[in-house]
Amino acid sequence: QKEVEQNSGPLSVPEGAIASLNCTYSDRVSQSFFWYRQYSGKSPELIMSIYSNGDKEDGRFTAQLNKASQYVSLLIRDSQPSDSATYLCAAVNAGGTSYGKLTFGQGTILTVHP
Amino acid sequence: KAGVTQTPRYLIKTRGQQVTLSCSPISGHRSVSWYQQTPGQGLQFLFEYFSETQRNKGNFPGRFSGRQFSNSRSEMNVSTLELGDSALYLCASSLEASGGPAATQYFGPGTRLTVL
Image (cartoon, rainbow over all chains, first blue to last red; front, side):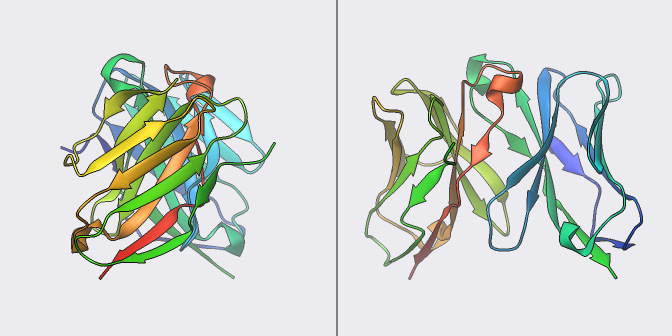
C-alpha cells in the first residue's frame, strides 16, 4: 500500500462546478498535510495546508482533514479553466527520521472545461 | 520576499558525467529538501539539510549527494550519470522541518536534467 494515495483521475468538471479531490494516507503519525497544484512543465505550487481535524477555507478552496479516517480532501468551488492542473496531496511526519520529507500521492489531473 | 531559486534551469549531460545543481532558499528558511520528479515515479524525496547538516535521506544510491552552506544555500551532485537520472529536480525550503506551519515547503522552479 502506498503511503499517500489519491483518487484516480483524470477528473473532468464543467466550469463553475465543484471539483472534489481526495487523498488517504497510511501512516498514523502523519501530522501535516498539503495540497499542491502543478501545471504542466512547472513546479508544485502550494494551495492549502491543514494540520488539525476539520475544514479550512481559503477563497474558492476548502481542505478537509479527518485523522480518524486518515483522509484529506480538497474542494474547489466555482472551478475555472485556469484550475486545470495536476493536484498533489502530500503528508509530513513530525521530526525524527522524517525531517523535511514530504510524501506525495501520485497526483490527480483535473480538467475544467468551458 | 523572493522565492526559491534554482540554477541552472535546464541541463543536458551524457552518461558517465557528473552534475551539480544549486538551490537558494527563501530568505530566513533554514531547511532545504530535494526531490526528483519523473513521470513513472512521481515526486521522490532525495534528502534534507538544516544548518549545514543532512538530517534525512531518501532511498537513492550514493551517486546522489548534497551539501548546505552557512547561508542555507544548497547544492546537490549526481555523479556517473545514468539515463534514468533524467528528471526534474526540485528543491523546496521551509523555516524548519519539525512539523506544523513552519514545515510548509515552498518549491523552486526546478532543474530539468536530460541525460543522453
